[in-house]
Image (tube, rainbow, N blue to C red; front, side, top):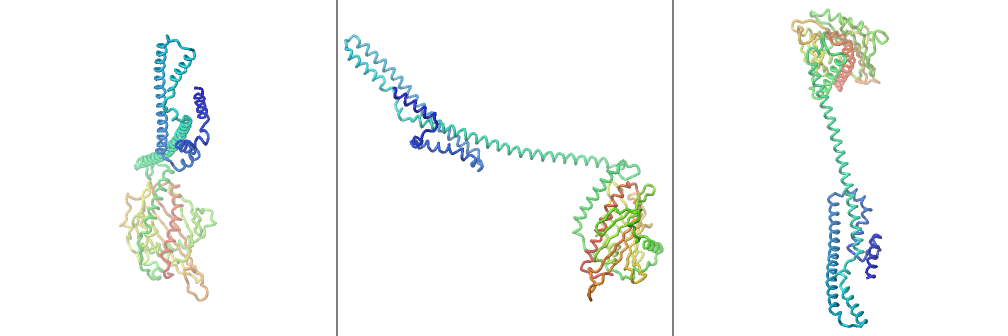
Length: 494
């Protein structure tokens, strides 16, 4: 009995001490594989986590550990059941021995016989006290297996928690992204809703250009600028799809005279005024402000108002290589090419052809809300200016000025603008080297563009000046680039 208690104490101590010795592990093959797998779990947990082990795999591992524990419980239960059965048998046997002893009590026995029989009874009593199969259970191995299994369960459970936390973090990030996307969409929706309300609010006649307009200058300018930006984008999209047009160029002698028509004297007067005043340098004049300077292009403005209407004269100078003054004026004057470079026109038509170099043109410009739509009726004439001496540059001029015509009367749909515009072009030629022919690399066109426009209506002065500062340089760059593209590779037209 003492030996069995000592053995049980040793098993308990070995179980509490951990996994036991290496030799004891070798004696239990099935337990070795479990223990080694569990002990290496901590070393491989990080790598397995990085490899993306799925939650189901870890749950399957826990199911395996559960089966191991269930088998251990079954083994122990069988052992304890065996112990209980043996105890019951021992009690019955003890009672039987006592009864036998009581039956034999009257007989006289010697002390030695009594001791002999007593020892025999004790031997019978404890003969089967050990349950059947007790020596087949390895308590030390079972303890090590239990510890390894519970450690594996805890490690796997920890891994499952890590997977769940990682998955929760991933879903939280996706939720945050969706919430941010939703917030932006809601803000865009509110902004669009406000814009629609603002448009409907400004849709009435009181919020358009007029003497009693309720819209302030800042709102007016913002609306005009937004409309111009939209027109620019539309123009960029349609520019590549334009049809290339061409028209025969009349001989230069046609443009040397004014011609005979009812506006001949007016045309001559306009030409002389422009040649006298428009070519004067205004760079040092304090009345003229330099508002834009981009490379060779300079734009000047002189602020003039009459009865609250902006009448600012504008003057721009520019130098363009590879084209002549005749070519620039030809594309500016010929209405065949008008829609190729003029992006502000809605439609136009030639009301009357006065001569080969003069015509009356009516055109309506695209409306830029909240400004009223403008139309203009003007006489357009092209002239070649005869040089006074051989050193004067070859000069061409196109002048456009407002006139009246019975077939194009002002209408209530548009505000009739008044214009006085001139495009003066001078060709400068640098002699080529040797006997080479003159190429486009040897020519330079100096352009002077003057514009006096009375827009009419009630548009704010600050808005008109801001739009002019934006649109005039853009027009000049776009038009001169168009002329360069049209003349590239073609014979030079002097």
